[in-house]
Image (cartoon, rainbow, N blue to C red; front, side, top):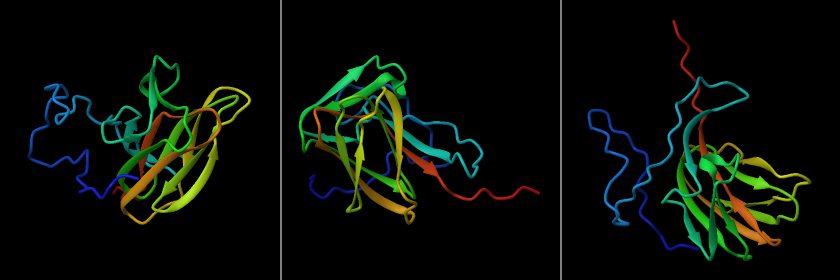
Length: 175
């Protein structure tokens, strides 16, 4: 597991400050891929508004072990997946919010992932009779900073497509 880290929100927007361009130097200290931002639709009971959606290639998702980055994956978010072929490989991510959605591609002969959310563990099978994109949605959490670990628990391979932080705030009624 990664050592203690100082948390700085990735997509903090400050009113009155300009946005920075999405391309820049190739120095790893200055990532060139910003977080994927999705316009926030009106909230509903069945489909939550999206606060932030992060592709598996997002620089703040920390991968431990050997993960293979696959491109041109039809149907995957931004057409990419990270794939683990080794048990105990894991991906680590911190986020601010009240819920997290982990998306992956399920299919024949895929394994099981262990999702550790603030120390609470969930076993999620990626096996499916047909190849399809699947979402695992966490329970609603207390608003704050949370730690997410997606670990390769069993099976030949597992994958990660994206991580979404839904906006669960109740919309203010209009006049």
